[in-house]
Image (tube, rainbow, N blue to C red):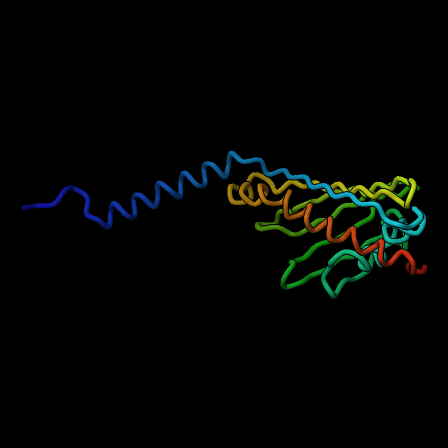
Amino acid sequence: MRGGMFGPGTLVLGGGAILMGAFLAVGFLLPGRWSADAATTLAADPVDVLRYLDSPEGWRAWTPWPDSVTRSGPERGPGAGFVWSSRELGSGAFRIDDVDDTAVRYSVDVAGAGGSTLRTRGTVTLTPGPGGTSVRWHEEGDLGRNPLMGYWALFMERAQSTERQKSLERPGEAAADPPTG
């Protein structure tokens, strides 16, 4: 008795190809954009919290960055930043774009695959109130139209919100001893 037109190997490989094609098609349809939010109230004056937001050294005191960075721009305010090249985190740049008494806006560019740049923009807003300063951190990015990155974007909101919330706990602890400069 002779078997069918397709042997077991052909069926397995064909089925795998169909599943991979469906996986990539769904990934291509997923949005590449993501946003994340975190908030807390710190028992500190807004001016003390701002010292951790208007300088690259302040950011490095309360948020995780590669160990080896090179400073760029002025010491504080718009244009201040740093660049890095790390085996774990790749190459990138952090820059403070705008600062006022109530908010700091920044951007982070990370070198992506194929010469692309993955850009994150964020705003940290300070609101004085009873018991300290309310801090709201909003961040958003675009991972592009890569079908694999569409899946990654699904997880970015939760992952980034969790990481931002952890970072927000640090300036409250450090505000009693603000950075100088």
